[in-house]
Length: 312
Image (cartoon, rainbow, N blue to C red; front, side, top):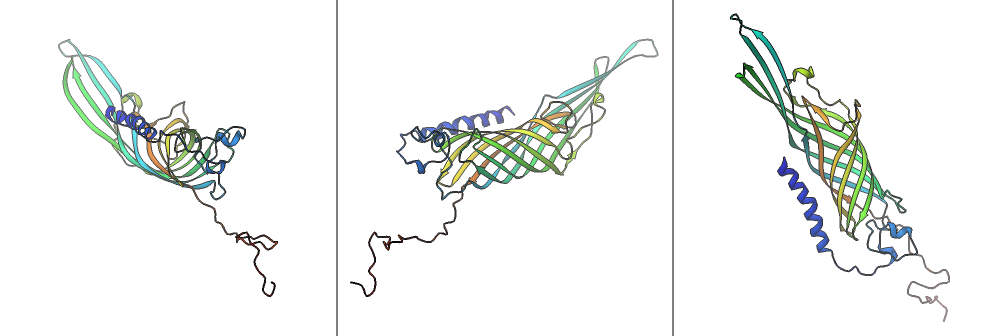
């Protein structure tokens, strides 16, 4: 688990640094129409800069398709335990202490997610550069090691260890409001708040051992609704293609609401879904159906007046 987090941290630090170093050159001077929208569009009294991503030209549309794919990981919270102690007396009148110890040790596992959606950018953004919404599939996986030990007078009589697992499949609707911080004309950072409404397609769970104090195992509701945060580092790879690696995590459970939590319950433990994806955003061009228009005075596209038949 620690190695996984170190690996993700390394990627989010090393890749942006490498890309910034490769693009660290003085930008060429461009006209206003060569840039996308951003702060430069709002302040017309200042010179345009290289800090815009979406193009403003009328040949580009504001909306487009997006596709994303990547792994999921269930970040496990610290395990829980319970103990039942009984003080007895044997036939000889000696004191006997019976103790049953229970431990629930959770562990996250990798899954898969994929999404298809639509984004819409704004020509005059005020904090929100674009919004996106769509449909996604995600698989959340994890396990819990359940250990029971029976003791008598501090001597262990027996130990039972059982592994409980889950691998749930969800279909999810999501919506995000995204702000951007531009690094240069090709690189940008995104921060987004959004909601996701999930439907449990296939609940796949094995095991049902519970800590005595819990009274039974618990699982997520059939249709959870969550508020989530999404961080991304974007690259304008081509004129009409944006590539945005993102990291998403829930911040608040709306359904089912019991108290302020942002994790999913499985068996005797809680897990936080971490969605790591690479998004591909496709900028569309408008259709140019207008025929060529010439000067009504008879001046052709070459700037010369065409000769009329029979007129010298």
